[in-house]
Image 1 (cartoon, rainbow, N blue to C red):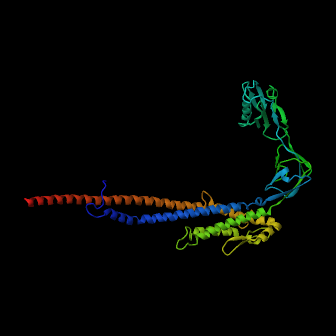
Image 2: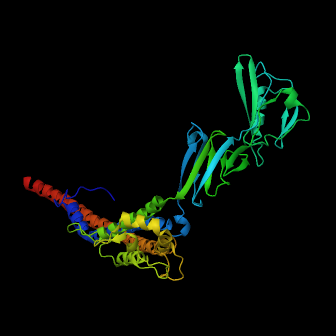
Image 3: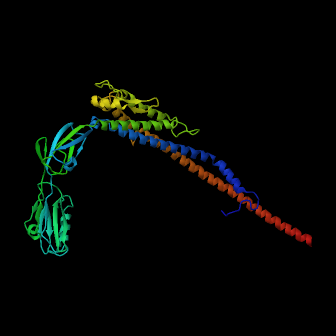
Length: 456
């Protein structure tokens, strides 16, 4: 359609008239867009609820099994030497440790076997030696045209594939005219490198000599002498990994492993914090900000979710062997605002005197809801809510998205109808302008003719 200036002939700004009419016609679309914005806000709010639920579930999972309470720490002291414990060894205490005290002496460290070649005047000159040597089951073929660099690269290439040789090679420049090839086992231990040198290219051609013997580590634990091929030892003391750093036969390290109640308390504090974070968000959704309501204000689904979570935490656990069957009895209390808090003295006291009872309260593996531990049943409840396929929260989000998709289609249809209506109105006004322009031209012609006749 040709472009016309609105009201050029008629003097009527019909483009503004059409715009005003379209604004009125567009009001239903505006209402639908506002509805979609509200739905998007609800979906975003449910996404935040889901995030906080997952955080609470993670905190509950950290307390839902009796194994989760097997938290230990270690303390070490040294005697018989001026060295520090860290000079001799580092240690890590895992979850499957046992309480106890262990005396440890490090007699020697494990070390890797190493070789060094004879001196060569250059590292990039052909050596003129050839033959095959087998290193840990992998064949190394040396050609007469190989340089020291070539041999180094060939050795290192043996570490590729499904059966790596486990040896490394490098070149040391001793002086401008003295280069030596070194070969070392990647693993420590007395077994060293298995070398089959039938051609003599390794021992005679390269002049390889052992510079460091492979050696197993030797430690004495509780009077028992133990050897291992590695300096990282995790199979001697249950749940304890020793990283040997230095040997000193006169030094005795006493490692004491004890239950880490502070670590358990940290887990309970994380649990309380995650619960409070979720409840604060839910309460905030039900707190109007002036005349503006939050996306999930008075949402009955959110209220039911809150009730389910609260019941899982605050309900007692039946069938326990002690009377500590509610969180409040071990110092985890709820205030009038529905938030949890911890009485440090009470909780720490029961962790010292009734540790197993605290464990059962959180992680009891009951056959019914009433006999299941607080953390265990909370984990189960949240898992049902957040399941990525048919979880309650996901279902709510999918429902909201479905509503938004329907609104998008409806808005698109209405926009298309408005566009057609606007074009129809524009066509009519253009036709009116065209007609008026034609009539104006005819009037001007008639006026001209009349003026001509009158002048004669």
